[in-house]
Length: 237
Image: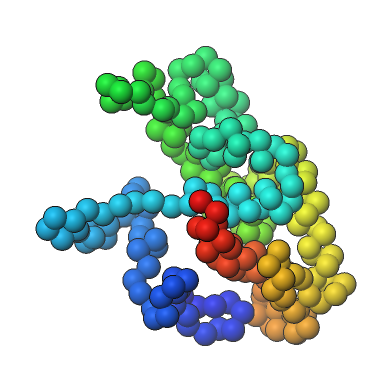
């Protein structure tokens, strides 16, 4: 359950085929942040197992398609861990470790192998990968360098430089985001791939009162587009 920033009302996430609220197990604390051991409360019944699965950066995949971003599309086609690849491009020492083969971007075990020959990037450089992951989704959903500087506890200049580095290889994403902002300001409306529209007739009045930026409005729309496309993705798999 969470509060909607647009309406100020409480809302519960629903799954596509279930018409009533259910527990959202996707919102468990991350392993490194689970100080109260909440994850240990989820226990499979006798004879059953818990299966952990997700769509693998679905929001970023849709962003790559929407923006027709060449580097993102190539990375997803190549497979592997997108956040590890982003960390490698963000940090010179991480790239150096990959080039020297002291860490692996990803590992596909063969029969009889139970561990990789050298550590995986996500294990050896967990902090850098988490920052890369945060940056990937922050840019996708509209967070500004000011917000990132608070999250990372760095200067705004350092956050801006990091964001600029991210956009350097993904200019199509920046162009697409700027076009959507222009569309919202000029037409007071934007549309998703599925034809759903979001109108911004009240944006200037209420947003100024409640401190909501246009970026935040668009990120909400983008997130809901992802949710709407989940059934389509399931049909294509």
